[in-house]
Structure formats: C-alpha cells, structure tokens
Image: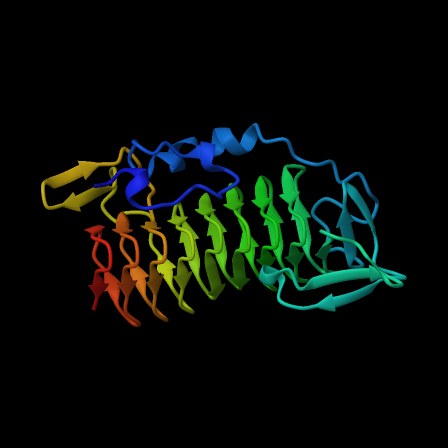
Length: 266
C-alpha cells in the first residue's frame, strides 16, 4: 500500500534509480542527499556565471558551453513543450537552455538540462538538478537538494528544499515544499504549503487503517502520487501521503496520513 510502485510510474523518469519499487515511498527522501552529492555535475567554467552573484546578462547553455545571448534570437515559448527556441540566423541550437540576467546560482553542484529556462530573480543553491525542458520561474528559491525531472515547473516565489519532482510535476505559484515528492503530472494550486515539521517534535508517523507507521524521519512534508493535485491555498500536515489521482480541495488542510487513490479531501 505504501510502496513506491503504488504511487509512481518511473519508466521515463531519468532518476528512477533513486527509488526502490518495493520500499516505502518516502525512502527516496532518505537517499536523496547521497544520490545528489555523487551526481556528475557540469563545470560552468565561465566568467559569465559567477558563484553567488546575480548574472549581469542572460546566457545560453549548449553542449557544455556557456555563452552570451548577444547575436542570437530567442523565442520564449512554453518551455515545458519545447518551445524555448534559440537561433543564430536561421540555424536552431537544439536543446539550448537559457539562464536570464538576475538569476543567482550558488555552488558548483548545479545541473541544468536541455531546453530548460531559468528566469531572472530565481535563486538556486547547490546541489540542484533541473531536468530537460523544465522552467524555474522568477523569484523561485531552491534551497538545496532539489531534483526536478523533465518538463517541470518550479514556480514564481515558490520555495523548495530537499524535494523531488517527477516528470511533468508543477508547483507554479507561491508554494512551499520541504522534504516532499511530487509524482508525475502532479500539480499544486497557487499558495499550496507542505508543512514538514511537527510542533511537538519526534519522527513523523503515517496514519493508516492498520495503525501508525513510523517513517524514521523528523522532517517529512507530503507525497503526491501520479496525477494528484491540490487547490489554491491548501495546506498539508507533516506526513501527508495522497495516492494517484487524489485531490486536495482549495482552502483545505489535509490531515496527516495516507489518503487512498482518487480520494477527494474536503
């Protein structure tokens, strides 16, 4: 019931090895730091990207190279649909990513995938893995150990730490995610907050029909299965697990514990 395979289809997820189908679904949070610390990160050896300083100008990342946008034409279409297009004359640079002026990158362990787009004002702390065709919007705050798969949205003024986004997961606006996992095609309404620390201390336990299950984690936000979604201004208590296709209604607080697939939490 609480195993990884009950929540996610990992067949196209680039970091599927982070998960074990038969282990508890939160196990990936326990191995995330080791996985990201040993990842092979690119070396942005360029004066155009300075550690901890706002980029003075927008840059292009392409095939391991970093260069200025000067002389290039950029079409700022929908990143998640591969519509961010970079051209020099009539020639398109397939898979080129863009980091806009004003974005801040801190640390050397940052990987930005093909066709990705980082808007000005975003702050990304190492380590971070931003997947292909993923969009990091203005004001996003990635506090470290953030891993996003393909075609994700890490939204405007959204704060994320020690969390995993599977392919096509989106947290578009004003969200907070700590020690959490979003399944494939999961979507957070504006203002969703995942609380990840109990007031009374101690490990977070998951409430199930068979009793409490100790996760062994002091910090544990929420896990949303594939296709699950939350409404605007919703909140989850620490240790909330929502099965595939579940819905947390707007302006609602989800009780901690396991909520079976396609549950509507009102």
